[in-house]
Amino acid sequence: MISSSYTPPLSIIVPCYNEVQTIVDNIKALLSLEYGEFQLVIVNDGSKDETLEILIKEFELEKIDMPYRRQINTKKVKGVYLSTIIDSIIVLDKENGGKADALNAGINIAEYPLITAIDADSIIERNSLVKVVRPFVENPHVVVSGGVVRPVNNAIISNGFIEEIRLGKKSLVRFQIVEYLRAFLFGRIGWGVINTLLIISGAFGVFNKKVVIEAGGYTQDTIGEDMELIVKIYRKMKENGKKYKIVFVPDPVCWTQVPEDKKTLKNQRKRWHKGLMDTMLNHVKMLFNPKYGAVGLIAMPYFFFIEMIGPVIEIIGYVFFILSFWYGIISFEFAFIFFGFAVVYGVFLSSGAILLDEYNFKKYDGIWEYLLLIAYSILENFGYRQLTTWWRFVAFWQYKRSGNKWGDMNRKAFNSNATNEGYNSKL
Image 1: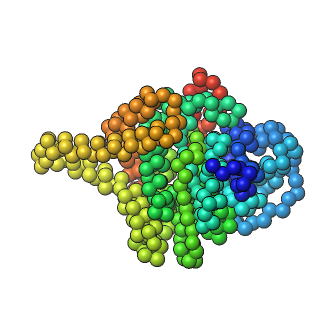
Image 2: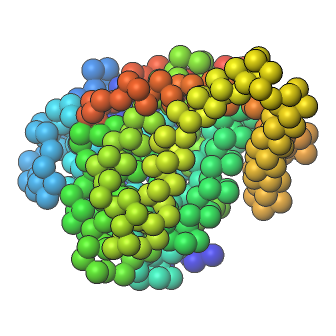
Image 3: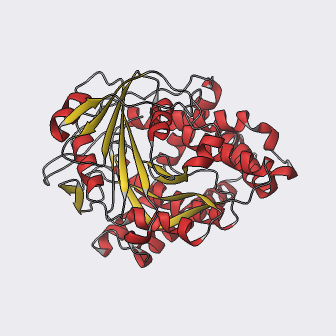
């Protein structure tokens, strides 16, 4: 582990919109991070609640006359505030422009060469920043580094940090834990090995600020701003003939709230899929284009045909499979074996990720919790997977470019004791 005293200085951007329930806990946690020199840039994107007022009161902010240089174009900044008690805090108050616009405003005023964006409903572990910045120190060609995101629902939080990790009381949360483990510990590790990682979670990624500015910052007319930025960086670096590396580090963890009800989860997954479609259609010229190397020949085709079009094929497959069985085109034995193979394959991937987590990271206390997750990796094949696939199928046909706006929020404060019921996530 590289000591935090040897890490480059970092600007942490916290975009927020109507975050009165979680913003103070989040900022307190960030202030206690084990990192050498960092700056907190909090961007209030025209919140309609008391987000700005509570920040002013809690951190004794004073408005200052400070120039705002627009390296990336953004909505009007109404005020810049500095904390009179904590030197590292700066707050931007701006007109509402959506999450991408808020992030771009934070980049414009960020002081240091590395930047990271942390969602206001997320908490990162104390030593996570040191770990995720380490690749920048070890390899000068690294331009982006990302860590793991995990659901935090029902965990016990004290002074902005997690005291006890729990699985969550609701099955919907536990299904998502399995999904997150599978996506991060299998999918992103694999893409990172061949330098074709197209997604660094918007909840936890570190970027070279200069590279982000050269790529034009976060795109404002998309709802998948995190993936869009990564693809823009790949495209810019390849077209300019520059060496680069985008890496995934499986150990540093950011804990975030996930949906606990079907309506919120449905809207989230539909937004995710529409964001994926935005990026794929924006950069369709990269598809099968050898000019962009493995990204154009492997990653883009995978995300275009498997992730974007895949739900359509899967739903059509379900329909034809049921009709074929109903009309006797396929036998019961064949249907049973085919479905069983699909389930076993899915369980193998999910349980492998769960066991890998238990062996390497041990984020949960008891073996029974991992066994319970393996049980949910089996159960997800009987309804949950089909439901999320259907939402993505609907999103495919409902797709239209709608711009980068904040999703509706329904926040609860982080748990401070075991009796709280958990959280709802932003969409």
